[in-house]
Image (cartoon, rainbow, N blue to C red; front, side):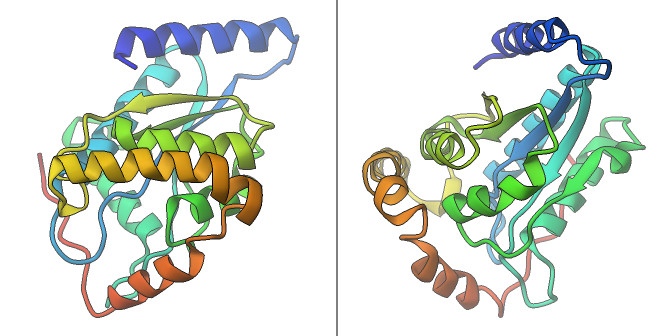
Length: 223
């Protein structure tokens, strides 16, 4: 979804919300999905955070009460969780763009999950306070992410905001990453959600997360 399409979609959600006669602003959770892991620096993960800031600015400019929801529990050797690392990314990049008070708009969610399905499943308890979510990631990853969100949090409408094509994600060759995400999307839709309730990958991803504990998240670069 490009910026103009996101603007139109947000405007539509705002109109629908106002038609309900609710006497408060639309509460929007901009939800960047975890990209960076402890270890090698992956610039693609920074693109997600920059896109999340873009979506936050757009929602705020349209009159919504917008927040950036940071979540994820992969822990590095210093005890830093994915959620707190993403918070550092948001603050650093937003300040670099002249938005020095963004801390007030950051919502820290769950800090125990190790993969997208688990993250979405546990995040439900945090996200039910919002009226709309904007999922932010590269477009291939948004395929399985959207499936999990639709299954676990059907109470909240959501939009997808692409940060790019995902080149460099996970350090994989691009064709391999595309195949992985298409397979993940199909698996989530037809197997993981209906039969395993999004828990099929829990044990495997927990082992991968544990293997990262001896590493550290890379420093957040200035853009």
